[in-house]
Image (tube, rainbow, N blue to C red):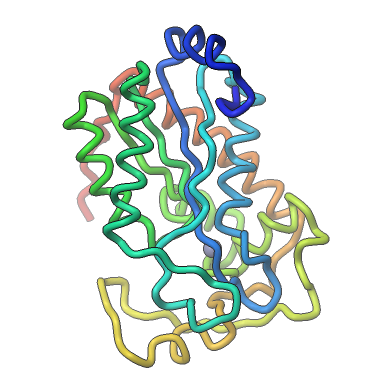
Length: 245
Ligand SMILES: [Zn+2]
């Protein structure tokens, strides 16, 4: 159920029955020369739409927070960057607003990597306010499953471009797809020249391998996993075995 379509008496009635609010979060930023600036919110909104079709009487979809933390890619036209402190406040205050109306669980359906540290802080604040909170960042949370469908992952790379093609193929400028197979060490890292090194065309990965069919398989897999994760949050079934290796 989409919260923005409800009247306030209907909202009051539904929030008593629906214990879980899902908030889509993204970014408005360059995604290669081939994917739209809204890629990082278009994907979470589609995941939420699928979730609504599958379990709409059990989750309330909140309005999106579609600007994010993108200090690197704002070298490219159109990109809008919001400061970390502001985003922590927006994420936690919006979520705490829903908690004040009765939500017991908050799920951030996140489409943008730069938002993760701020969402993590927000989750701690939401827990202090008395509700449970979780961040699902699709490409990271389901990386293992994605690599069973795609050869590689990347910003506007094979996986992300495939999902956009499955949502609306007309949004992808196929002729402008490119490949950049280098990425930085996976640890917190910032250098003054990282845009040119890491994202020469505002992308990394191999978007030439993207297909609509892979995107459709990714969307189907992610719907199944989102339902599983959200139901586990609702049941407070959050422990998994420690994998040694
Ligand atoms: Zn993206």
